[in-house]
Structure formats: C-alpha cells, structure tokens
Image 1 (cartoon, chains in turn brown, purple):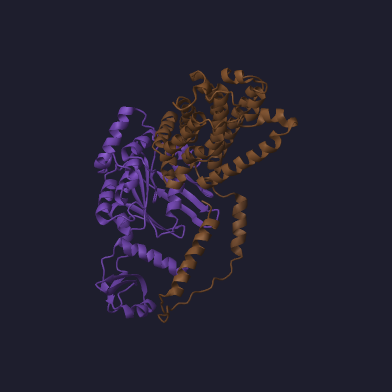
Image 2 (tube, rainbow over the protein chains, first blue to last red):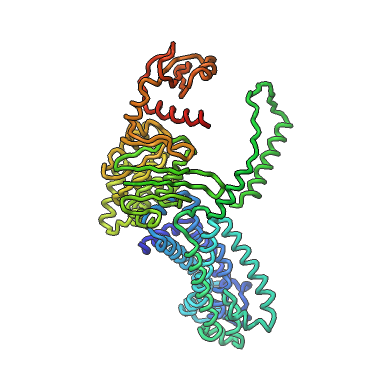
Length: 326
Length: 291
C-alpha cells in the first residue's frame, strides 16, 4: 500500500502545472550558467563552463531557490487533504498513519528529486550550444553531472523536503509553509554571511552548513583551475561529515513530524476543558435586537454611495488579508 | 451492534456539540434526524474515528473503536458532509486509489470492484472526467461509491441528500436502499422524508442530546389523536400561536396550514394523518418550550 500511495502522489504531482513550470525555470537556470559567458557561480575565468567543480557549485546554489518549489510538492502532499476537503474520506480508510505519512512524503520527495534533474540537464544543454566558445568547454562526462547531483543535490533536497513536510504537517497551511521558507532562507543568508566571512568559524560552517557550501569550499580550498576542470568532489573528510549530518538532520525532522501527526483530531485537553467551563460561567446577558423592521430607511445611489461602497470593500479586503493568514 | 454510551464532546472553542449521547444501533438502516447544528456531524465524525470524544465509549460488535480506530477503519465506509475532491483527478483513478486504501490489494479485483461501483452509481460514462468538475449529485454518487468500496460492515452517510434536486435525491436513496441488510448504515440528515422513506429505526438529535428514539411507525402511532390542523390566513397566525401549541406551520397556495398538539380536538380544527414530520416537529417544539 505504501508503494501505491507514493505512486499516486507522484502521478498526481506530475499533472500539477507547478511541476512543469519549475522544470522549465530550473532548466533555464542551469542552461543560463553554461550557455552564457557572463553568468558563472564562483568559478575563476579559466575554469570550463562544464567543469565538475562549476557543476557542483551550481547544483548546490540552485538548491536554495528550489526550496520554494519543494514547498509546492511536499507541503501540498500533506496540506491538500485539509484544503480540498477530501481528507475525512482518506483518513477514515484503513490506510494507517505509516502509509499515509511516509507514502505522501516519498511521493513528494520523488517529484522534487525528479524536477531537480532539470538543473544538470540544463547545464549540459547550455554547454553544447553553438555560440559557446569551445575554448571554455571541457570534455563532456555524464559523471561530472551525476556526482554532484548525488552528493550535493539529493541530501539537500531530502533535508529541504523533510523540513517543509514537517512545517506543513504542523501548520496545516500552505501559506505558513511559504512564510516558514522565507524566514528560513533569510535567516540562513544572514547567518552564513556573518559567520562565513570569519575565519574562526570556517570549520564549523563546513561541518554544519546545511547546503554544503562551506564543506565544498573547505574541500576544494587549494584546488588549481586544472583540478576544478577535472576532479570530482571527494566524498571524505569534512564534506562527508557534512552530508551525513544533513541526512541525519532530515531523519530527525521526519521522525518528529511522524510523531506529531495524528490521523484523528484529538479532544481538547482536560486543562483546556476546565478553563472553558470557567469562562462560560462569566457569560453576561446578550443585547436583544430591534424586533420590528422599519421600512422607513431610504436607499440612495449617488457618489457618496460609491465612496461608501469602495471604503467598505477596501476595509473588508484589508481585514481579510491581515486577519486571516491562509 | 453499534453501541454508543455516554458520549460527550466539547470543541476547543468551547462549543458543547454532544451531551451524554447513548444509542444502540442495530443492523440495517438507522436514521439520525436533527436540525442543522444539532451535533449530528460531530457524532458521525466521532463514530468514523476522525475525532476522539471528550467522554464516553463506542463499541462496534466486540471492537472498542476508541481504543482501536485502525481496526474499525478496515470495516468502515464513510461519506462525510460536504467533502471536496482533489483537482485534476478522474473518477476512475480516484476510486481505484481509494480501493487500494481500502485494502483491495489484487489488481484484477480492484478493476472489477471499481467498474461495478461506477456502473451501480451511474458514473460509468463519466469515469474519465475530473471529479472536481462534477455536479453536486454526481459528486455525491462518487462519494457513496467510495463509501461502498471493500464491503464495509458499518456505513456512515452524513447529510447525503442536502442540496440535491428531487431526481438526484431519489436516485441516491435508491442506491442506499440497495445495500445489504446485514450492514449497519447510519444516515444522518435534517430531511424528515429521507428517514421516513428508508429507516426502520431512528433517533432525533437536537442540542447535542438524543431527544427521541424508536421505530418511525411506533413514534407516529404515539401522536395519533393528538395532532390537529387548520388552514388560516397569515394575520391569524400570532393569535393561534398564543392560544395553541403550534408545532409546525406550512404555506400552501398562499394560506398557512398549522399543525397543533392537543389532547382533544379544538373547535375549527381537522383531523390529520400524522406523519414523521409531525413527530419531529413535536419533539423540537417541546425542546423550544423547555428552553
């Protein structure tokens, strides 16, 4: 059943236009980096457009932007039941918590991983464009594309997916998941900018920075341009430590999410019930409405009505946006 | 078969939706009648293991459903009140997926079961269409199709006919009537005729409490000789309400027909063949008088 749930999720998301739009955008992102001489990600001039180092750097960098897309796949997988109103039907079946949570997650993760293939594929296509100076392109080797995908992209996307899946499970809202992502990305950028520039935190950043940039720059600190053009990232030392840390963190987040998730809506706690009982005792008498409807009021349709109509719509819209987040 | 003992539920916002509800529900069709906001859906959701009550016990056969919700879900068919559906999924695919969730593991079985249900609910010609584009009646029929999947022993249908046109409603009730008598079917509704048409046993739920329980025919017999009707003009209504215990008012061709409760026939009133609606309205009228 787990397999079937995951497969349904995968097939469902493949019909989602968001998937195809993101596929296109991330293809363009990869394509642009290799097809244009003006765009590069942290590589010196003599490094090839399709050098294994350049591909690894891009694979890592794009995974930050990919967080926003993942929200749509992974958070949707769990929030969809609440937003569409189909949830009660699914939750009343014998699906079981294990199949429900892990099937949805695995399906969403598979879509996310599949969609991210657009980045290396875009880089490959970009570097083969006729207008790219052949001097700046090295030999094509599929391993140069697959290795960073395996070592950098998969753990990064696993962590991002676990995080968003957890966020969506707890908040039960797409909007809050998006807000969570924005806060996380901002926080990440601030923290990594502050600490990344300081030498005494370099080792710490390399070990625990979740997207692996610290680890990559630590592992390749003394590389020459020739190394960058020909050497795969060595999965050892600080990079290996960082990747294992990222996967472990993802596992912890998933375990927490699983623990927090409940198939049935729990009854309010005893303490809450006592508090409610206390509150209800203090009820004051309600005002009574005017019983008789007077037909003496008048209706007008002039410029002051238009103004009043505009103002009340404006007020309602503002209240809707401010007071109901999602 | 299904025993509900002392079930109460208070929501986190303080609403007391169920107040010490006890019911004993045998096999066959059971009607749960009540006005909007009576707590019917809360009770249905609680029996369907979608929420845990603050107090009480529910057993199905030997099964304690609060302790082992997973076990009940294996035998349950549930059609919730106003459910939604996923966008971009066809009726066939969704039903096939539901069959997997209901434990129909074999691919061939699944195909057979899904096709026969689509046929039974008259959705065969729409099997390739997205459910999100279905009309209300079609969506309800899809809902009952998924509820019937996998031979459930307990079927809960919550307000299934609300919002259906008379023809769709008939079609839907016929579907329900075709289900085997060995199954416990709980039909929750605010439409008296649904219960009158289908259910050999029923209860009235209002204000979170069970107000009345029994067989519709017995309940109707109890009101015999106590319900009277009169056709009056609109302006006389208030005066009649003051003098008599009016249980229902209905308009017919611009005149008002009132039904009242009295132990002997007051002057000017006629006999009336009491129906389940009179029983229901008498119960609600009693409740309002107490309040």
